[in-house]
Structures are given as structure tokens and as C-alpha cells.
Amino acid sequence: MNPAKLESYKPEAVMVADGNKADHGYDYDLVVIGGGSGGMAAAKEAALLGAKVALCDFVKPSPEGTTWGLGGTCVNVGCIPKKLFHIGATLRESIQADANFFGISSVGVKPDEMGQPPTLKTDQNWMAVKDNIQNYIRSLNFKYRVGLREKSVQYLNKLASFKDNHTVELVDKKGQTSEITASRFLVATGGRPTPLDCEGGDLAISSDDVFFLDKDPGKTLCVGASYISLECAGFLAGMSKDVTVAVRSILLRGFDRECSERIGDYMKEHGVKFKTKVTPSKLERVENDRIKVTFSDGTDDVYDTVLGAVGRTADTIKLRLESVNVDTNPKNRKIKTINEQSSCPNIYAIGDVMDGCPELTPVAIQAGKALARRLYGGSKEPMDYINICTTVFTPIEYACIGLSEEDAIAKHGKDGIEVYHREFLPLEWSLSRHDSNAFAKILVDAKSSDEQVVGIHYVGPNAGEIMQGYGVSMKNGLTYRQLTDTVGIHPTSSEELVTLSITKSSGDDAAAGGC
Ligand code: FAD
Ligand code: NDP
Image (cartoon, rainbow, N blue to C red):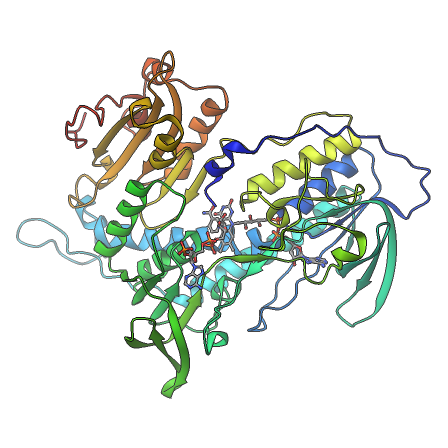
């Protein structure tokens, strides 16, 4: 979900903590269920504030049998391996596309008659990348365990489910059961990939498996057209795999259409194939362990790997939430909350498992810390879910904050919005890539004084690094006037955002020259 969609979220009441009561008679003040981004942050913050805390984390193997260590989705099967594969793929692309323009060639290879070194031919070994990333992740798993110990959080590698609203039953990997009690519980169990629901759908792997594959994925079909499918398709294609994306409707639903289409165009130009308006209707195993996919339009093809990335489902099914009257949204099984408090007053929820929460690591962390501070630190500050930056790490990255152009027009009317935009060639591509441009766009409330910024969009290299700082300004009521009053840093792509002057309403071309 595009976080901008949460603009309408308004906390109804700020819950005030009743402090840390040591005399409640339970084993712990707080038991956190789920050791991912949100759970770990909340547990450590609560312990720091003096609460007696235990954290239960247990990874149920994926249907393929993949399992991993402490830290949750982000570190094991999400942001971290994904970004490292993305870095590896873009590094390879840079070596292949740009290196010779900077005079870099293999030692001993002579320049051609024009003095140009030949394009570097590269090979990227799947197992080497995969093993190095996995080794790094194992070191993080270890650091997280140490981190919990240092903060005096009791780590329990056990699967938890509610017995009553002050007791959870725990099962360890040998099947042995035990119970612990607590004054409060925090559910931070995240989500798991939604399986493909077509015939033979179990032949597809998911993002829980792709980063662990013990063989090169080869020719791959990515099903789905949002963050996960496009990011995986991007790094696989960047690693020279033959990749097709099966798109049911549109790319990146909820995001700015113009920017989403630019991503699709860039990926097509860089070798990713798109099958549009289709879903897989049947998967079957064929010779050489390959998978034949029949699509809803009657076409078929054979792949080495099929990756299902059709959304994620909240991991609540085994928690026995009904036994403690915790309300969930029947559509997605997520926990309904007000200020992270569930319908059972001593049970809270944060992160991907909380209904209405953007599925992003920093959101889970921030919400976990804010909740711990309210419960044990006397804070009255609710989590602010508005204006959250995000980046899609596709081969050309896309970062945004605030409203898409479509949502801005829906909210303010066509005459109420002005768009400042520019298409430009980033300096890092200027010697070698004349066919790809970056794009920056700022949406302003045309009727407000100094033109209040309601959305910032950037498609180009280092998008996440660029957008973070603008996120701070957006939180503080950024105006177009403040942007253009800011002196840029030259030569960078980020300076484009403080020098945008071409308006869409003028009809002038968004493409501009350098310097
Ligand atoms: P999780 O991190 O999912 O942690 C939940 C933990 O609870 C897990 O360890 C689980 O095993 C455990 N658990 C579940 N049930 C029980 C139980 N009954 N008892 C004990 N333990 C249990 N976000 C970004 O911000 N940037 C990105 O670039 C990004 N990339 C992503 C890429 C991929 C492929 C995926 C899948 C996600 C990505 N995300 C990204 C999203 C991000 O990973 C999640 O939003 C974040 O991890 C959610 O944190 P959480 O604490 O809510 O849950
Ligand atoms: P999303 O829920 O965002 O998107 C699901 C995609 O699958 C959509 O394109 C949807 O199409 C498609 N789809 C759904 N059902 C089917 C089906 N039956 N057949 C074919 N296609 C289908 O899920 P993701 O898995 O991509 O990501 C989950 C969340 O994880 C994201 O919302 C994001 O918050 C987080 N994440 C963040 C990242 C980041 O910060 N860079 C990276 C990766 C994940 P349609 O539009 O037609 O519904």
C-alpha cells in the first residue's frame, strides 16, 4: 500500500500509559510476540525504560522448507537481501554499461582504434552472491541475539499462541510446550507471502525462498506487479536472467501513474519482459524440473523458476486471537487497533500485522518505540502514520512522499494542484547512457500561500538516499517557496528538486538541459 493512502488516518484518542506496575504478579510486564523490526524495537525500548520483557520469535518454514534466524522479514527475507541483490545487479550493470566510458578495461586489453576500451564482459555467479549475503545475514542474526541480551530482554525461540489474555502457550522446535504470563502483550508477527491460488500454484516459490536458492534461478516468471515482484524481477534481470513479469492489472497500484509507467518503460528497455492483463491459470512440472505456465489468455511458456509475489497475508492464524477477543479485519486477518491497542485492552499490535499500517520496516520500528514510550515512559505521543517516505528498489529506483498526482487531483481538484516537473540526464549516466532519463516531480496545493507541497516524486539513481531528507521537510509543512529558496548542491540529482520551475499547466516540455 502506498503510505500516502494513510493521509486520512486520524488517531481517535491518545492512550496514556498507566506506568510499569511491578506488583501485577505476572512473569513479565511485557511479552512481545514476533522478533522482527517492530517487535525487537519495542522490546528493547520497553526494557530500556525499566520493563521486564520477553520476546518470542519462531520462524515457521516456508512451504519450500526455507527457514531463518532472529530479526524477522526485513533482515532475513526482505529489505536487506533484496537491497544487496539490487546493489549487486546495478553494480554489474554499471560495469557493463559505464565502465569503459571511464577508461576502465581488463588489465592487458588494448583500446580500440578510437581509443575506447571495449565494454567489459561480466558474469555474475548466483551462488557467490547468495552465499555472501547469507553469511552477512547470519552475522546480523547473531548481533540481534546479543542486542536483546545486552538490553536484558529474555529471548525465547518459541511459537506463541494465546491461552487467555494474560497467558501464552509456547512451543519450541522439539514440540515441547510451556507457558508464560504477562501484564501486557504486543503482537508483532508480521506477514507471510500469499500463495498463488491457481492449479499447481505450490510449484511457485516466494520471496521467502528466492534469496536462499541453491541454484541459479535461470529463466524466471515473477507473478504480481508491485514492490516485491518488480524489485525481484529487476535484480534478476540485472544479473542477466531471462525475466518475465505477469501483470494482472497495472504496475504499482496506489503509486503515481506517470512514475510507475516510467519504471515499466525503463525495465522493458533493460530486458524485462511484461505479460500484461494476465494471471497464471495452471502450473505443471515438465521435463528437466522446469515449470510450464498456462496463462489466463491461453498462452503458455516454460520457466526454470516461478516466483509468486501477489501480496502478503498477516501471520495471525495460529495466535488464537479469537480466544482473547482481539478483533481482526476479516478481509486480511490483520489486527484492528486504535493507537496500536487492540479490542482486548492489554494486547497491542504493531507493524505488518496491524490493520492499516504501511508494510515498511521503519514504520514498524517507529510504532514499536512510540508504543513502548507510551506504555513505560510516560509519553503521550501517538505514532504519526502520515507522510511516510518510501522507495521502490527497481533497476531505476523510485522514491516518493505524500500524494500521487491522481490522489492530489482527487483531493484538491484539477485546478487546485500545480505540478512542477523535470526530466533530466543524471551526471553519472552522462557519458554512457543517453537513452535513459531521471524524473522529478513536485505537487503543490496551488491555492495555499507559498504553495504547500503535497507530494514529491523522484525516479532515478539513489532515489532512497535523495528522498529521506525531503521527508523531514514534508513533516514540517514544506512549501514550494522554501524549496526554491534552498541553495542546491551541485552537481547532484537532488538539486533538481530545489530548482524545478517548469509547470505542467504551462504545457512546456519537462525535459531540460544540464547545468
Ligand atoms: P516481521 O519482520 O515480519 O517479523 C515478524 C516475526 O514474528 C517473524 O520473525 C515471524 O517468524 C515471527 N512470528 C510470527 N508468528 C509468531 C508466533 N506465533 N510466535 C513467535 N514468533 C512469531 N520494507 C522497507 O521498509 N524497505 C524495503 O526495502 C523492504 N523490502 C522488502 C522486501 C521484501 C521481499 C519483503 C517481503 C518485505 C520488504 N519490506 C521492506 C517490508 C518489511 O520487511 C516489513 O514491513 C517489516 O519486516 C515488518 O516488520 P514486523 O516487525 O511487522 O514483522
Ligand atoms: P502488494 O500487495 O503491494 O501487491 C500485490 C501485487 O500482486 C499487485 O500487483 C496485485 O495486482 C498482484 N496480485 C494480487 N493477487 C494476484 C493474483 N491472484 N494473480 C496475479 N497478481 C495478483 O504486495 P507485494 O507482495 O509486492 O508487497 C507487500 C508489501 O511489502 C508492500 O505493500 C510493501 O509495503 C512491502 N515491501 C516494501 C518494499 C520497499 O519498501 N521497497 C519492497 C517490498 C515489499 P493488482 O494491482 O491487480 O491487485
